[in-house]
Length: 104
Image (cartoon, rainbow, N blue to C red):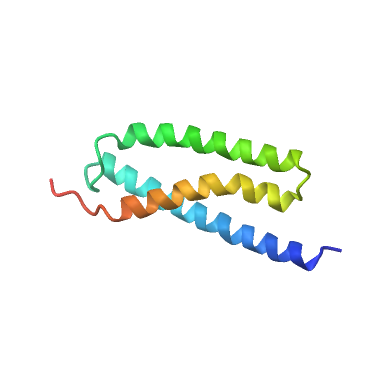
């Protein structure tokens, strides 16, 4: 039987994952529109999207590894892994959504 606290944690992780995925899709959309000259992005946006992914992935792997080695439950490990990636996608969504259409 699953403990009630684990059910809440699992639902919370599910919602956090869905939020991250929706924000990631929006960020991809903004960046593709930026590449097409439709959305206003900075000149270094293409390089930024590559470098930030590797950093977030390293942070995610390190956090998940640490949580695993500490003997945490799987939902805690997944939460620790999701946090750096979720923070980055959320920040990118907020930053890019404010830029608006290109004035070219």
